[in-house]
Length: 90
Image 1 (cartoon, rainbow, N blue to C red):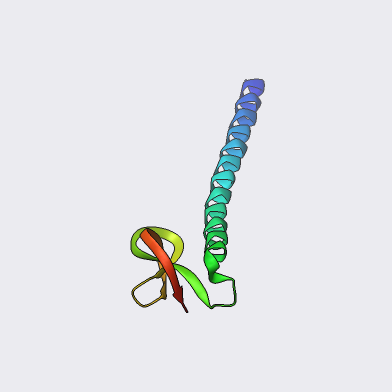
Image 2 (image 1 turned 90 degrees about the vertical axis):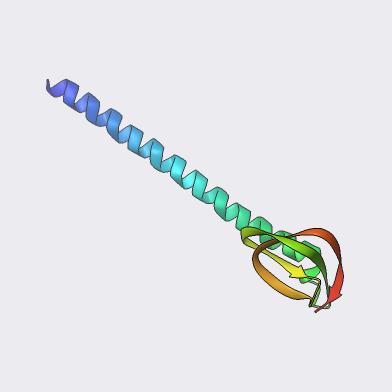
């Protein structure tokens, strides 16, 4: 009886450990998406001294993303630029 109890306890602890590792790896992917959004923003011209940036004519909701709206060349948060693009001055 004692051996069965300890065997079940060890399996339960191992399952909890594995579940926690899966949770942490999924959480890391979300951070990677945010980092990727920042890299995309820099690559689109945001990091060139603030002079000209790529802007988009429309947007799509996306948590953590940013884009520039061509209408007034303003930075929009939690949206992804879609549609036709051009360059505007900030």
